[in-house]
Amino acid sequence: MEFESLFMRIKDGRVERLMGTEFIPPSTDPETGVSSKDAIIDPTTGVSARLFLPRTSNSLKLPILIYFHGGGFCVESPFSPAYHAYVNTLSAELNALAVSINYRLAPEHPLPTAYNDACTAIKWIDGGQEEWLRDYGDLDRVFLMGDSCGANICHQMGMRWSESLFDVKFKGVVLINPYFWGEERIGFENNEDCKFLGGDLVKLWHIVCPELRGYDEAFVNPVGDGAPSLDRLGCERVVVCVAELDPLRERGRAYYEKLRESGWGGVAEFVEVMGEGHVFHLFKPESDKAQDLMKLLVDFVNHK
Image (tube, rainbow, N blue to C red; front, side, top):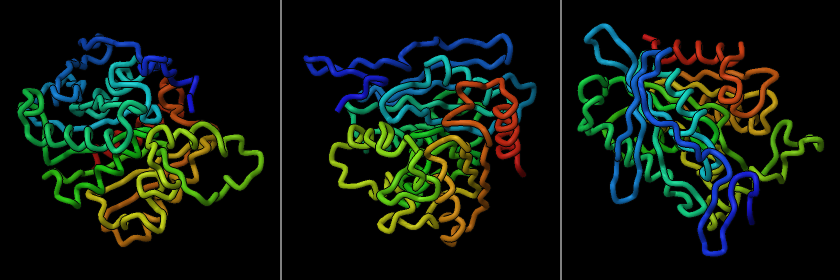
């Protein structure tokens, strides 16, 4: 099964990606004053990160924002124009030290590789060996944020905290248009006009995880009967953001409702952006609704 809009398999086994491959070098942004640099997290796997340091005039340490990009686990990186620009803006607006993680991609590296790479990255951040993290980052204020499959990774990392895989407990987790699914159709998914059903984003799970036994696997459907209880989520606050025209919106809503019912002791917030589609904030970052989302994120990170 191939996905011509995302990648092609070459006869010799190589994968040629058709989007998200452009590399923007790190720099100091003249508009925001944010400086960026790249760091190798694990030389044996190539897992790396782009760090963003805002211009600051005081000696107080900054919250740390760990960002996981989307792209169906198959494309994109922190170095592409859309993600470099967006996380650069997040760093400036949130006044946070942002760390955008470059995890390995499917189909060459199927799940759980992305999850394991994310875990490695969080342990590296928690270790505080990197200069900017050591000098400017506040490990008592760590936030996870991601869109689409990146939001899926955020959920997984929140759950792995309960397994004592890393010391840091997250102050907050932001799931933007999370990439979840399930065997049974819910909500508007029952609408016969929903062209997405049976489409590429559903079938893509079989590329991402060739050993997938069904769409109710816990990493696909975190609210399914076989999934661990969400009361184990290792953070204090969660915001789930969905978009009205996103075919995945019902999955985000179901996640929020299940989290509220689970007995988890934190505070959850649900936001639906009307008239917009999947990851609209990347495609239209200057739009009023993307700006409203940014204000929400600023309030979320700066909440006392």
